[in-house]
Each structure stands twice: as C-alpha cells, then as structure tokens.
Image (cartoon, rainbow, N blue to C red):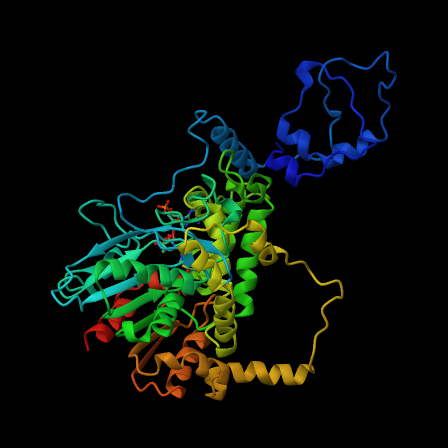
Amino acid sequence: MQTLRQFLSPAPSRGFRYRRLPSTSRIPSTARHNSSHARNLHHQTPFHSSAAEAPQQQQYPDPLPSTNPALSFPCLDHVETRSATLSRRAPGAGPEPSYTTGRTDTFHSTDPLLLDWGGILPSFAIAHESWGTLNADRSNAILLHTGLSASSHAASTAANEKPGWWERFIGPGRPLDTERFFIVCTNVVGGCYGSTGPGSVDPANGERYATRFPILTMEDMVRAQFRLLDSLGVRRLYASVGSSMGGMQSLAAGTLFPERVGRVASISGCARSHPYSIAMRHTQRQVLMMDPNWNRGFYYDGIPPHAGMKLAREIATVTYRSGPEWEQRFGRRRADASRPPALCPDFLIETYLDHAGEKWCLEYDPNSLLYVSKAMDLFDLGAEHREMIAGLRGKNQYKLDAYRQGETLETAEAADLCTLTLPETPYQETGDAEATLEEAAAADIGASDEPPADLVAGMRPLADTPTLVLGVASDILFPSWQQREIAETLRKAGNKKVMHVELGVEQSMFGHDTFLLDLENVGGALKRFLER
Ligand SMILES: CC(=O)SCCNC(=O)CCNC(=O)[C@H](O)C(C)(C)COP(=O)(O)OP(=O)(O)OC[C@H]1O[C@@H](n2cnc3c(N)ncnc32)[C@H](O)[C@@H]1OP(=O)(O)O
C-alpha cells in the first residue's frame, strides 16, 4: 500500500539513478525523500551503471552534500507512525476504531425507510439518550438535533457520566430544563455513534454498507427520528431544537410535520445551504477521498483514512471559528520563535489546527462524514426543491411497497442514482454580471427585506409555529444573513411568532462554534423562547 509520503512526494523521475552506498553513509529517510536539490545534482554525477557492477543490495539516492540541509517533517512522520500503529493492530480485531461515546439506548425499526433520493434502508437503528421525565400526556418532549458529527450524548447521564457536547445547557433550571421537559437526542441516521450509517451491516448481504450506503437528506434523518418518537408515544413535540446542522433539521422537522411540532428553535442554521458552505464541505470531502486509505469507502478491514480525516477537520475548523478570535488568541505568534521556520505547523494558528485534526481523526467514521456533510449541502427548503423531492418520492414509492412485502429489488435499479459525471461542454455562465450582483444584493435580507418567494412558499408549513432563529455575526459558515433570511421568510409566510436574535461580534467572536460555547447568550435566548 502506498504510504502517505509516497502519495505526497513526487516519485523519482525515470532517469533517476542510484549508486551503492556504504551502510554508514545512509542518510535518514526524511532527508532521502525530501532532498530534491540533491536529486538535481545526481544527474550531473557519474554512476556505476553496467549490469556487472549493479549492486545486489538495496540502493539509496546519492548522499552528496547539498547546498542546504533538507528540512525535517515531523508532521508527516507522525502521520506515518499512526498508519504503522494502526496496521499492527491485532488481526481480526480490524484496525477500524469503534466509534462510541458510551452507553446509549437504541431504537430498531424493521419498517423500511425510503430516502429522498431513492435509496432504501430495509431496517435501521437510532441511538438515543434522554434527560428529564416524559409527563403523563406526553406533551413535554423536546427533540434535540445534533450538529454534523455529534453523538446523542448531549449531556452526562447515569449510564454515561462523561460530559456531553451541550453539558451546560441541559439540567435542572438550565436552558433545556429537565424539571420541565423530557429531552431526547439522537445520533442521526448516517452517523456512526450507534445509529445506522455507512459502517453498519447491510442486511441484504451481511457486509458493511460502506459507499453502498444511499445518499440521504436532513428530511430522511428527521423521518427516522419521528419513528423513534412514535415508539415513545410522543405524538406532538413541545419543541424541536437544534444548532448548525441541527438547526437545519429543526426547520425540516417543523416543515415536514407541522402538526407534530409545537415550537422550532433553529440556532446558527439555515433554510438552504449556500455555495460558500458547500464549497468548504466539498474541499473537506475531497481531501478525505484523496487519501489512498479511503479506498472508495471500503477501508473497514484496512487502515482508516486518518490523514484525510485530519486535513478535513483542519479545514472544517477554519470554518467553525473566526479570524477576529484567532487574532486575539494567537496573533502572528509562532509556537517556538527561537527556531527557524518550518513547513510543518509552526505558527500558533497552525499548531492549533493541527491539534484539532489530530484529536479528531479517529473519532468519527470517514464515510459518515462524507454522507452527512453531503446531506447538509443538499438541504433546501425552497418550494421548487421540495416539490422535486416529493415527485421523486412518489416515483420511488414502489420500492418501499416492495420491501414491505418482503421482496428485494435488484441493485441495478438504483444504478442511475450514482452515475453523475461532469458534462462534456464546459459550464457557461448565464445572465449579465450586473443582474447577478443585483440578485446577490436581494439575497441579503438586511439590504432588501424581501425574502425569496420560492423560500416563502416552501416554508409556509411553518406559518403558525412559534420559531426562534438565532444567528451569530462572526459565523462564516452559516452567516447571520441566513438566519435573517429564515426570520424574514417566516414573517412573510404569515408567521407572527418569530423571535430573531443576532449576537454581534461584541457578544461572541467564536464564530459558528458559539452555539457550543456561549451559555449566556445562546442558552439565555433559548430558555426565554421555550418558557414564554
Ligand atoms: C457543522 C455542524 O453541523 S457542527 C460543527 C460544530 N463544531 C464542531 O464540531 C467543532 C467542535 N469544537 C470543539 O470541539 C471545541 O473544542 C469546543 C467547542 C468543544 C471547545 O472549544 P474551546 O474550549 O474554545 O477549545 P478549542 O477549540 O480552542 O481547543 C482547545 C484545545 O486546543 C489546544 N490548543 C489551543 N491552542 C493551541 C495551539 N496554538 N496549538 C496547539 N493546540 C492548541 C488546547 O490545548 C486544547 O487541547 P485539548 O482539547 O486537547 O485539551
């Protein structure tokens, strides 16, 4: 298998020649691989070349002294060491880490789930945890939706005392008050913390789905969650609450099941993904998929693509925080100013990103990242998109019927779902630049106050649902114009119970991660909304 360094470093050219070295003069592997200057010198140097003289032992590049020493790359060495450690794991145990944050409850649905883009899950599991007590008439339930990669472990429980990702927000008297509400949080379908996802076993063949897992959407995740609610006997939620991707799901829940959702809270979410956020997720998916260990998703018996995951997380972290925060925290300081600059992480902001990637690269299933991140890109509550999906669901209903009757469909029937190729004719921009700019200005709700008609029509099911929309001015991933857009869209659709809160930079410089960090402003607004 190709090592990361082989993957990243140019291979020696065809004309590159070797000569035998005395063992004492072998140069360190790092220098061997990186001394391109030395390589250039090789071409001007006479070598042993006849077959008779050809050395039988392993050959090494010419160690002639270079003008400058080769740099060292501890960041690459570290990644290679991790690959080696992972490959040495006990045979049979598999190098694939098991993704878990502790004990959860699991709901199993044996009724097949038809997904928006035509895929089918013949059965599925939803891992969930809960806090507080469901009241007698089951009217105090709050469904808490997670961000992209979070588990159902939002707060510590008796079964799992480890702090959860919203630990300070859940408990007696807290924003999600466990003395009043029964809060349930799930790991989404597509995830890897106990719910069915690409790492799960396909009942059709007993193998892991890997990239045979179907494309899914926010709405698919929500439909699966409502199956869980059915099993808990919860007909109507007191509220649907979520941040980031959870903010998308919260709106999706209210739009899909308006009669079953009493209130919607969407924090740092959006009504549809915008091109910049799609672009940023695209780059994460691409670096991950370019890691040779990803192996088109079939890595479960091999080394997981931890290098790609690390880089993906670093890019994601750039979108989760803000420049002004980093200006304050790190400025232009280097980790060790007494040493010469390095190509590996050097500035504090670099070591910070490196640390974020290191910490996470084995914490989440890479295939789950791809699928869930894509589902975020596909999110669009506009009427045109919703109608298109409704049509598709109608067309694919036969699949659900077939599965319910115990029939299995030929895989070939789904083949048309995954053959997207780039068109042969290069894309031509349409419309004049001025009109495009005007449209862009109109999309800035702050400037025009006129939300897109398509979105107003698509979100009309939420016209009567009290809704909290919270945005953060320092957020570059879900910029605050998107939450303004949600609020104005809902108002235009006739909703008179919209509470819109925008936290300025003076309140939070934490960017998108504000929802995880700002108990006072985010938690405070949520508590006021839920208890009024
Ligand atoms: C898109 C969606 O749907 S949801 C996306 C939501 N966001 C995420 O998933 C990102 C999650 N964010 C995190 O995990 C964050 O760590 C949080 C929010 C939990 C906590 O944030 P903070 O308290 O500000 O911690 P921060 O992110 O700065 O990280 C601190 C860590 O960085 C380390 N660190 C800080 N500065 C540096 C530096 N210059 N170099 C190296 N390491 C550093 C600290 O030592 C600490 O390490 P540790 O976690 O191993 O103890």
